[in-house]
Length: 339
Image (cartoon, rainbow, N blue to C red):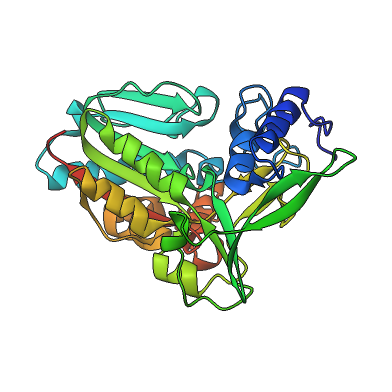
């Protein structure tokens, strides 16, 4: 069954991309600017237009842990209750804030929980939360724009896009000048041909979240690497596109109709939180994250489903198994007492 998404480029998105090209005399669009428009342009962005993005059907483009039913929300609630209890506080005093919630839905919909309130905040909505909070996100940071670079024998080049004479998008690159701010941050020892996708926007997002006047628990599930891994173990970079559950490296295809993602740098996320007064726990695999923070809930669920292979048991196995989501994703928690 084919997708119902209109494959014709949105006129307003096309105009925005051409305006980005016009900012530079050579027509170069840095990839992070292309990705920002393709995902978040108000009228034509992938995440800002109404569409069925998440799920397991042929009409969707990808699925997340939240696609597996309420069992994911039950585990997230158990994690939050556990971590709040470690601080000798009551979850009844906390608002559960979910950032990047799809279409106003929350991971806690239909889940019994002890929190004072649940506040889902969709992409593009204003952030208005304060006081004691659990601030949660699932695959939010990997959807932030990234810059892209490639090492050559003569230095680093920045990757991006531009328009051909007949008006189609093409891949382009330009040298990184030695006196630029980014040149002083790019590593010197990557071999020629190495691709480095630079997830600065994800770290900036963590800093904006921490800047809000709230205290309590930060919980993020996402996929990423340490800085060491990004510059040593990812020679082809980490930026990818997804459409109808197919992964592709054609990042410029049909802007606004496919998802674009980039692995985040967990070291940068942790540093941004620490700068704002958070105590940050070590990043662990999703499997270890739930085992460490929701052990009693896991035991309860396994006992309930022990005698059968139910839908809930299947979902639980997908969340935890290393060959499914258990190792693909990582989890981070952080706590701040005083805002």
